[in-house]
Image 1 (cartoon, rainbow, N blue to C red):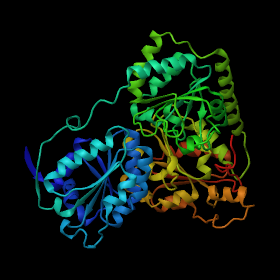
Image 2: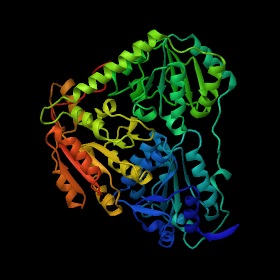
Image 3: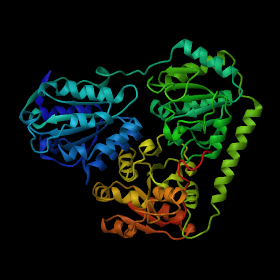
Image 4: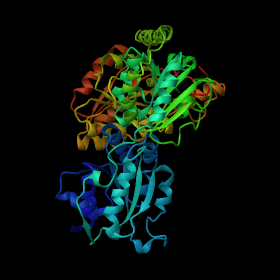
Length: 557
């Protein structure tokens, strides 16, 4: 046991968890922590331009690496500016630890400068939110925070550290590796549950795999593919989880849910048994109704926590266990019990749906209209992007086309706001992704409205040389809302139209590279040039202002 200063203790505890980047804006309330990094260059403080960007960057880093990421900001507005990004990490189950330096502890509950009840403000969007109330408890509470963030269904944790907890304080601390203070082995399935799963699979005539984000968090993507191949099971993916299985696989039909594949929806309606692995069956995957999951469909739901098993749809079998542990135990049992593959008729039916989707997407490569249709942009991206490319997709109408049209070969390559639906998400998330995967091409896809929400982080990207390519599809409107007004309010547009600068020129003002594309046949070459320019880059593409996907409630496919 050795004594170190409070700020040094915080940094050493972060380093023990493998943290090498901390995101935030410098503030006086945590300078005792930040000062440690003047001499210790093994950790980089990514000094951003708005704390929301810091939270999104940490979310992107956590998602791409599977490891914890950290924000460090000042009290009051510095911390409240994190809220939206931390909510995004909560929806995505990202292990982000957000730390705010607070006022002097003696001034709490006195309406001190920048004093807010941050612990309660963050409680609804975190797995845990707590205050460090004694300097000697810094190691205990930080380890608790990382244990909470990384255990079970992962998620963010918030810590409020009053400035006097680290200022001129010495802390006793043992250097411990993470496996000494948090679980290192995930939860296995119950043997009887596996036997029941085998029985249900044996009885099914039209079984279908629905693969969610829990498969990626568990590192079970390869095992899901083995299960599909062993039993000839067709696969679909949950909303925003397209990268959970290789999209070129002959058993993969497409993504389910809002802006997803009609063919995947048709397969889901036809299934008599739905094997759901690592998905909550959340709102934009299912809409909580029978448009995709028919009444009477038997559901096997495997999730790492019990909270959402059978919550929205009654299950024939619920298994609270880690996806990888479950599949590792299930695959040999299926072979031992000689469970037969799905019927030839069902294989042929789902293969026809897969071919139907591929033909539909290929036809969009022939769209030649100008302004460019967003569907053609995605066709060109499928043609030119390397399989290791990581894509962050923003909320909004133009990005929404990407859910059904982007192609993924590897896990941890698709990053979306999921059911938070947050505009401005993709660019800062892509910066975090690039820091976590510096050797991979990283692209953010935005509409014009969403991009400008966090466009100031272009300066962060240039200063830290985080070379992300951003595609801005510009239709000079809030497209999702304008689509609702078009379909449901007789095109009575109020508040939907906006104006923009030329984003290629905006990029150049910051020292980034800018491109402007007006014809479909320029897209591929421009994307390749941007990926190779060795700078952050923005590609602006004016798109058809009348092209909108149908609103979520407009159709029940």
